[in-house]
Length: 391
Length: 118
Image 1: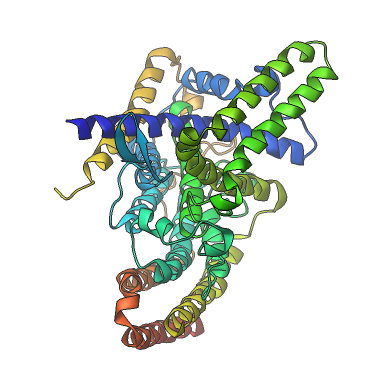
Image 2 (image 1 turned 120 degrees about the horizontal axis):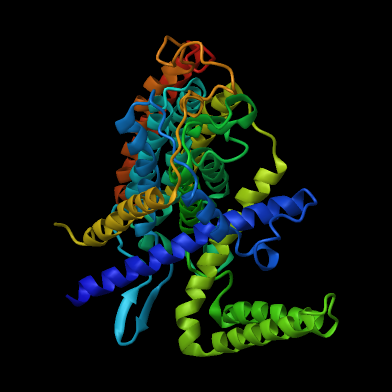
C-alpha cells in the first residue's frame, strides 16, 4: 500500500515537472532564438513573456479542430496519441538523483529502475517513429506523406549510430540499469565516462548527440517538416490540440535525449568536482550571484517599477542560496541540481544549434548517417573494447 | 510480474490520460465550422490534382532493409557489452570477429550502391 502511494506521488511529481518543463522549454527556445537573431522574443504576455506558454495553451485549445474527410480516420487519430504517449513514457526510467530520505521514507529520485533501462528507453523512443510515419500516411496529403517517409528513413538510419554509440560506454559500465550506469561513474569530470581513462568516450558522446538531434527531428535534421519545401511535413493536416501533441512529443524527446546523454556520458547526478572540494557551494554561489545582480539593478533602476520588484527577487534568491547551504537540503537538492544543470545545458545546445546551423539536404543527411557516423561508431566501439580489455 | 514495472504502467496511464483529457476538453470549448474549402487537402491553395494514394518512388528503400539486419546485429552487442569484463579476452576475440562480419557486409552493401540515392 505504502509502495503504491509512493509510486503515485513520484509519478505525479515527475509528470507535473515534465509538463512545466515542456511548456517553458518552448518559451526558452523562442527567447534564445530571438536573442541570437537580435530580436526581443515573446515580451507582451506577462513580464518578459513568461505567461506566453499559458497563452499558447489557451489558443491551441480554443482553435477549431478540422478532421478532413479524405484522411484514414483511425490512424489519423491514433498518430498524435502514439507520438506523445511514447515520448512521455521514456521519462519513467530516468534517474534524476541519488537515494534520499524524506519524511522517514528512504527512496530513490527515480520512478523505477529497470535492469534493462537502456533497452527500454531505446524501444519506447523508437516507437515514436510510428506516430510520425502513421500521421504522414493517414493524412492522405502529399506533403504529409513525403514528410512521414523522410522521417522514417531518417529515424531508422540514425538509430544505428545511436545504439552503437550507447554500446561503447556500456562496455565500461557493464550494466543496462540507468542507475548503475551513473553509479559506475565518479564524482568529478575525469570520472565521467566522457573523459574516463582508459577509454574516454568523447567520440561516442558526439555521435550520440548528433544522432539524438536527428532522432528528435531538430535542426539541422528537421527535414520531415522542412517548411519551405513541405509546408509542415507530417503534421500539415493536423490542427488544434492534435498539432500540440506532436509539438509536445518533439520537446519531450529532446528532454529524453538530454537526460540520456547526461546519464550515459556526463555522470548523471554526479557533481562536476568532488564535494570535498566544495561542489556543494556552486548552486548557492549561483543563486547569490543572481541575488546580487537583482539588488544592483534594483538600486540603479532602469525603469521605475524595478526599484520595487528587483529587491524582492534579490531577497528570494538570497533566501534560496541560504537554504541550499543547509546540509539536509543540500543532500536532497544537489544531485538534482547537477542533473538539471547538465540536461539543461544540453537542451540549450539543441536551441543554440537551431539558431546557428542551416538544414541538410535529404541525400546528404542519409549519406552522413550511413557513410560517416556508422563506420566511425563501429571503429570507436572496437577501439573502446580493445582499450578496456588491455587496461 | 517482475519488480519495478508497476510504476511504468502508472506512468503509462498518465501519459495516455494526458492527451485524451486535453483533446476531449478542447472539444467542449473550441468552435466547429467546417466548410468545403477548409476540408480540402492542403496544397497551398491550389486544388489537389489527385490524392496521395498514387504511386511514388520511395528513395532509400534499400536502407530500410539494411536497417533490419544491422539493427539486429547491434542489439546483440548490448548483452555482450554487459558481460564484457567477465568474458575477458574471449570476449575481445568474439567482438572483433562479430564486427568484422558486420563490416564486410557493410562494405559490400556500399560497393553495390545500396547507400546511394536510388
